[in-house]
Amino acid sequence: MADVTPIRIKRLSKSFDGRKVLDDISLEVTSGENLVVFGRSGTGKSVLLKCAVGLMKPDKGEVFLLGENIFNISTKKLNGIRKRIGFLFQSAALYDSMTVRENLAFPLVRNFRFSEKEINEKVVRALEMVNLAEAIDKMPAELSGGMKKRVGLARGIITQPEIMFYDEPTTGLDPLTSKEISVLIRDLQTELNMTSIVVTHDLICAEIIADRAIFLKDAKVKYEGTIQELVRSDDPFLKNFFSHEILNA
Amino acid sequence: MQIPKAITKKRLSFSEKVYNFFVTMSGLTVFTWEFFKQSFFPPFDIAEIKKHMAELGVKTLPIVSMTGFIIGLVMALQSQPVFERLGASDYLPGIVAVSVVRELAPVITALIFAGRVSSGIGAELGSMRVTEQIDAMEVSAVNPFKFLVVTRVIATTLVLPLLTIYVIFLALAGSYLAVILAQNMSYQYYQTAVIDAIHFGDLLPGILKTFVFGYIVGIVGAYKGFTAEGGTEGVGRASTTAVVLSSLLILLFDTILVKLSLLIWPT
Ligand SMILES: Nc1ncnc2c1ncn2[C@@H]1O[C@H](COP(=O)(O)OP(=O)(O)OP(=O)(O)O)[C@@H](O)[C@H]1O
Ligand SMILES: [Mg+2]
Image (cartoon, rainbow over all chains, first blue to last red):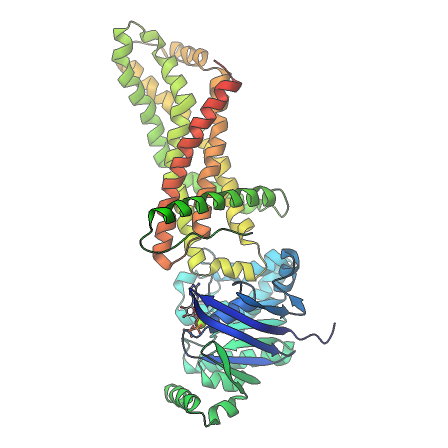
């Protein structure tokens, strides 16, 4: 099974209280590819990511991660798959009763057999990657929003997952840090051949990391292509969207 | 694990409230089933359980100590004149001891424990739920039910009986204080009177039922927190409804268990 497509989403639909948020969405991300997802606020980008990892159950449709239909396998098998994926929440979702160190060590301690020394090294290395080595013994409550985001990112990648889902990895970061994080995501892709879906509004970030981009609108994948194609598109909606993005950036 | 979902909106009609009541009951049943299924299989988070037990102890010891001492003191003070009028002062220590051991210490300790701990667990897990920390655990292949719920419920189930035994001793001390304030009784006499009065059939069911109460406090708090939704307001709701529900269930199960224990150990 060497050539299996890491992420395959088939005809996914999800509504809340009768309102369709995702309508018959299908997409594939090939091995080592970075897919960027654009969309106005509230269009269902986070919902898409949560359905993709099984945190939310879609009303219809299937999701295949690393070849397995995640809504159709045992919990044990699902956890086996989940050990090989990473997820950065839009809210970072750090465990607020644990220090930064414990947050990062948590998936390692729970799921893998590493010595204490190895865990410590990995934690320090992951924090260095996101430029937060000094925050190691802080509590989440003592961190700024952008710092939380970066700790969340470090926690997501510490297990060196094969697939990574990023929900707005650079929102709330200053332009320079934002660029560094984008480069980090790109490097992870090239060095570890990570496959990922990145939700972002940040065009600079998207330009650095995207192999391909899609645009969600009205619960559908409305546009698809490279960043250049989307930005240069003559479609009035896209023109409007990206001109604002550029002004803001 | 399939947890039935309650109807969440501001104003509920009567039939919707009844529906939600059954949702809660079946939710608690699912949680109980899941708890017993998961607590017998490794990994056992002994360290986590110990941590929770220590926290629970520290959290409840001061209030429980005060209450324990005062239950005994007040019970004896109140009964003193009545017993004297009946010319039965010598029986006072024994009667107080029996009521403390059989009913007062277990139930009052459990109710205080519910107020302090069920709300705490509800709020803690509730805020972990609404800030997506539970989702984060799940997606990193850690079983949040096992890590968060099972450990806490085991801790409450083990801590409450210990607290109750402690409260019994304090209450007996309180009642001794009341007795020597009112009449001349040696400690020796008091001790013998108490020990003679308390039978095995008093002590055992009194302590055994606190395991059930401790379990109720843990599982109700955990259920309410785990299923919380709707932001900060939902966390508040989880915390308060946990106290109300666990207190009611404690009283309900007290009635059932007392009836049962009288069948098993007739006095
Ligand atoms: N648990 C939920 N219950 C009810 N509705 C929900 C729930 N989660 C999301 N929604 C609805 O689904 C829609 C999409 O939400 P989502 O969080 O995916 O937006 P988004 O595209 O990520 O927006 P943003 O860019 O602001 O993060 C929203 O309109 C929201 O109201
Ligand atoms: Mg979002």
